[in-house]
Image (cartoon, each protein chain N blue to C red):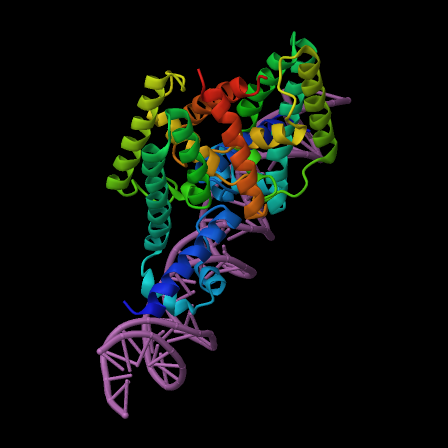
Amino acid sequence: MRADARRNRERLLDAATELVLEVGGPPNRDAVAERAGVGIGTLYRHFPDPTSLLEAIVERALERTVSAAEAALATSPDGASALRTYAHAAVDHGLGAVHLVHAHVERPHPELRARADAAITAILERGRADGGLRTDVSAADIVFATIRFCRPLAVGLPLAEERAIAHRHVDTWMDGMKP
Amino acid sequence: MRADARRNRERLLDAATELVLEVGGPPNRDAVAERAGVGIGTLYRHFPDPTSLLEAIVERALERTVSAAEAALATSPDGASALRTYAHAAVDHGLGAVHLVHAHVERPHPELRARADAAITAILERGRADGGLRTDVSAADIVFATIRFCRPLAVGLPLAEERAIAHRHVDTWMDGMKP
DNA sequence: CGACAAACGGAGTAATATCCTCCGCTTGAT
DNA sequence: ATCAAGCGGAGGATATTACTCCGTTTGTCG
């Protein structure tokens, strides 16, 4: 793959993610190309059918989030701090991508979802063992909470502000996750 | 206003709210009429321009939520329980309406927003006075949190399940709202 | 109970938004 | 220096959504 092709692919994904956040749903493809600073033909070469672009957005965000969860598990001293690290990372990577899932992208990437479930389950178990997390929450609860944190509050709110508010909500939520 | 006209107006609002939740945005108007069991002409008679339907949805939800907040303030024994009552009511009334705000409905109903702010501020003050709520949250924080709870998690998730998950999140959040 | 105005229904057309192809030009790799 | 891989974007095809219109139905009130 030529260097300019790879660069344009990344630019398209960045632009599309921004626009998803702005319009609250699948973006207009002409707008994606314009935002990315490439021609519409380039978009169609990289993402020929309508769903492949959305799937790529979700895959990239999910991959980053899963990696963050695994890293949090490996480096955090206890379950609570691992969960906090994971949740903040999920906000950073998931804003603008997560709310395409199940609305416009079906059953995304089973192997990534399995890795996510495994990491979250391990984090909860660690927290149960060290007594730093309440024991009445399931991995599914964490997933749902994560989705909620990653949903934009209002179309038009700048990304930085969305992010800041979401991080504060994560902090409050973490206080409620302690026994 | 004739009785059937009033009835159809309510049905249209109910149907539109459901559809907003299902599609995650402004619904197709033909679909709204069909769901409500009325003709498309009836919809256009009640809501001639595209935004009036959305505004009516938001106004109704906001009105109900504000009333709930004021009632919670009047009847709850302390700030924390007032906040909890308000948040649960907001989920019940706001699901399917709140995420139209600022995306598709501009600056909704200043007088209702003012009443909401006043009620929330009073609830927080009560909580500060009786020591049942943490003091580092603002009324704006509560509004943002409320919006987040009212956003649908996934298109296609049944309303009952959306509601149940949201109520559980409110409970966890309330635990984090204590000092 | 009858008369009338208010309200209704929904087929069909207009308006709009979105998609996507195609081919001459440009650029990175070797 | 060569050339294949990649790019741009005007413009026609297609789907979607909006809305009007008028014959029919239904509440209301004397």
